[in-house]
Image 1 (tube, helix red, strand yellow):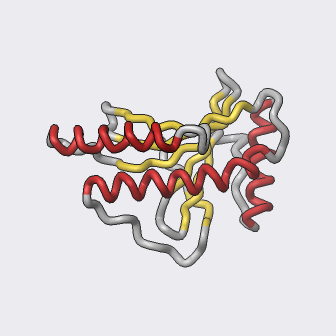
Image 2: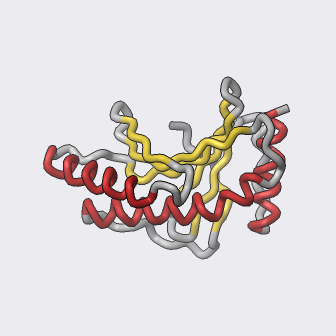
Length: 157
């Protein structure tokens, strides 16, 4: 039942964005790419009945300790400032070298429109976090595409 609820939520989001987003019933995941190149992933996790929204902010962590310290300090400070704005959190996968912003949505009892309601805030916060990371490390933001948001093939992390 919860996987079907997650799929209904994604289809409601698709309607609100006027997009066709593939069903997650088989793969349990899908992804969208914004015009700014930000990739937003949706992954359903059965054991906890969660639909995870996540956005990779950095795919290679800095190697220099001074850059890492600067990044972690900025992230910690921003997390304190952004707390209460969204339910999202910053995650770091040291093994794969990925920094990401994520938000779990429970699919046990939530309605069909919870994702469509939470997505705009998640999207804005993802962009704000990405901008902070790029500014802190002096990296270039992704190139813009023609479409505001479009479905893409998800990347397995």
